[in-house]
Image: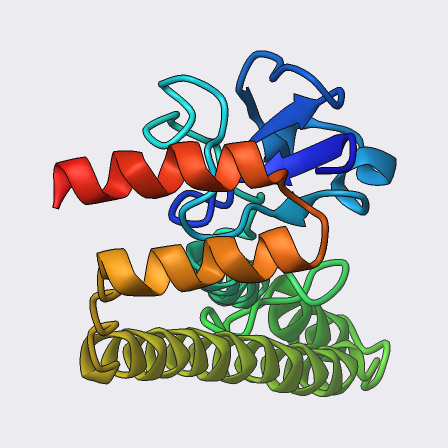
Length: 210
C-alpha cells in the first residue's frame, strides 16, 4: 500500500496518513488544506485502516451558504423601501409646501395674502402642487417596489422549503458482505496495494467475525 492520505469508506470526511508502515492520527479531512484534500484516496472496503476513531470521527463537513441569508436580505430590503416611501410621504415637498400625505401648505395662504395686498397672483401654490405630485409618485414607487420585494422573498422561501420537504430520503448504504470484502482484498492484493500477509490476516479476521 502506497504512502499517502486515505479516507474511510463509510466516513469519507475522516482521513489519516499512511507512511508505508504505520497509520497516523485520524483527522478531519475538511479541515486540511486544499492541496492535501486533492491527494486523499478512498480506503478500499475491508482494508485495515488506522485504529478507532477513524470510522466514527466527527467531521465538520464543507462550509455551505446559509439558505436563509438571501431571504433575510430580501425581507429587510423590502421593509426598508416601504419605510423610506412612507417617510417621503410625510416630508414637505418644498419650502412652504405640504407633503404627499398632507396636501395643505403655507403657499396657498401666501397667494391669498398677495392678492389681498394688491400684489397680484404669485403662483406659489401651483409650484407646490407640482412638487407634491412628483413626491407622491416617488412615494408610491418606493412602497410598491418594497411590497414586491417582500412578496417575492416569501414566495422564494416557500418554494425552497417545499423542495426540501419533497426531497426523497437518501437510501441507506448497504453494508458490505464478508465475501465482497474478501473479493475487494483480493483485488488489492493482485494490484500490489496490500501484501499477501496483510490479505491473509484480514481474511482470517473477517471469517472469524462472520
